[in-house]
Amino acid sequence: MLKQLHIENIAVIEHCDIEFQKGFNVLTGETGAGKSIIIDSIGAVLGYRTTRDVVRHGTAKAFVSAVFDDCTQDVYSWLVDNSFNNSNDTEVHIFREISFDGKSSAKINGRPVTASLLRSFGALLINILGQHDSQQLLDSESHPVFIDRYASSAEYDACMKKYADIYNALIQKKAERNKLDIDENAKERQVEMLKFQIEELEGAELVEDEDVHLLEKQKLIRESVKIIERISEANNAFAGSDDFPGVCSALLIASKALEAISGLSEKFSEISGTVSELYYTATDIADELRNSVERFDFSENDANAVEMRLDIIHKLKRKYGNTVSDMLLYLENAKKELSEIEFSEERLIALDAEIEKLEAQAFALADELYNARKKAASNFEACVMKELSELDMKNAKFYARVTKTEQLNERGYDSVEFLLAANLGEPEKPLERIASGGELSRIMLALKNVLDENDYVNTLIFDEIDTGVSGRAAQHIAEKLYKLSEKKQVLCVTHLAQISAMSDNHFKIEKREHDGRTFTDIIPLDKMGRAEEIARITGGSSISETTLKNAEEILQFAEQRKKEIINT
Image (tube, rainbow, N blue to C red; front, side, top):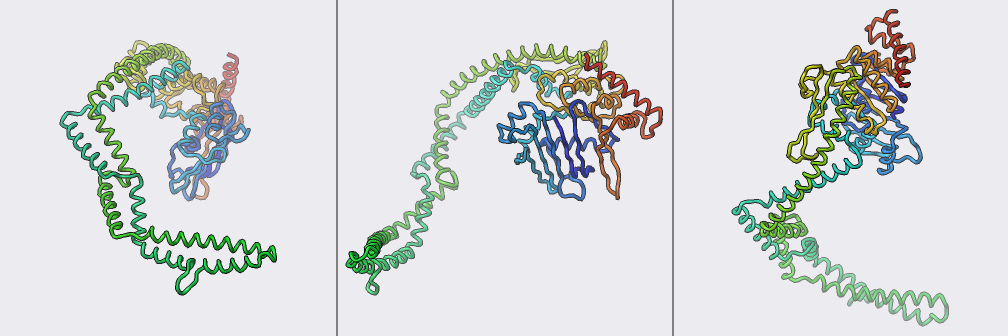
């Protein structure tokens, strides 16, 4: 669960620390006070995309850090698998820095992490549900995801994976077939071009890294005169010349002189041996230098041959690649493509057989998925309607319609669409055509409760999911959120007194001005503070004895309902 949140220089929040608790946490405050900034900050520390606009005016950087504990096994396994585990510490520390220049960085347990990896990890820690998620309900493309999550089991997931593997193989085979299935004239032109390219490249008799070696040789030829001169100088120094006896001759004289007295002293014997070794080493060097002169004695024909070969390779590079390695790879691919075209009829027949086999397997698995989804959808409908009934939508009829399309897609060959008949006597219609904001909020909460068993995230955040709700429906939502908080840590941004009163921990988000700047404070409320805040929510900024007493009664009623929920 989310234990601590530290925010620094994010929009109007200069500095704040929030200590969240288990159970049901709510955040309330006037519109524009900064409630959404806190949710955005949590999103930032989970790896959500941010911009430099979030950095508080006049500062260079913004910081968000979060501490999690009591995490799921999936979280700890991810940390170990990605080398972010922190000895035996069960706490998880995440840090995110956002600079005004647009750069950002993040760390998990003190180690740097990329934004994409942080996002994948964040999805295991917190699930944020807001108005955007309610909008997902209006998009039928997202509806299969809900049913697949509900139907999830070892057997179902294995079938999904097997289908996905076969479907992807089928797509690849169809793409390969389409590539081969060209008209005869185009095929003939392609064959002629490939044969010309292969003949030209093979005729060049290219050798791997030949261009590299030729350029080295070209450089040596151009410097050969200087090289031979320097080698000759060195050779004369060792072997000697008319004017200079040479190192070898001098060492030989020294060696013989020392050898004559080596028997007189162990020291002379040692030096004599060393000088003798130096003499033989010097003669070896002299021989090597003499032989080296011949290796660098290039003729004009040698130079011409290198230039001509480099010219041939240069012309081929303009057509087939930047290096000889690239050109050899081009040749290999050209031969392969030519072979595929020349034997395309046979390959087409083979591909058709493979495609037919894969399609049969895909349809068989799609049948299994369709039947499983139909069964899951029926149970899903019943569970959602039970939840909606408890959310003051007793007469609503919810449908999860699974329909065959006979067209294979990534999930099978069916489509899923959610429909709703909100009132008695009304026909069911797609959600986007009839659902109000309040109904969408309740449907989203109902779905969350139904899918709770398959949701392994420990912390849920509801960002103004109560939009368009009031009265009795608001109380039912409050009780559902509280019931959910018995299993998960729940954070909720709300404008409703009923939801605020059902919370275990209440934070007030308050905006103030000082020295011409705007600041946001996050204030944990005690019992009296909660009553005053609920009085503000129900009665406006002017709190009277009546509104305060009413707020206290709302809190008393909420405490009674919480006890009843715990005991059921």
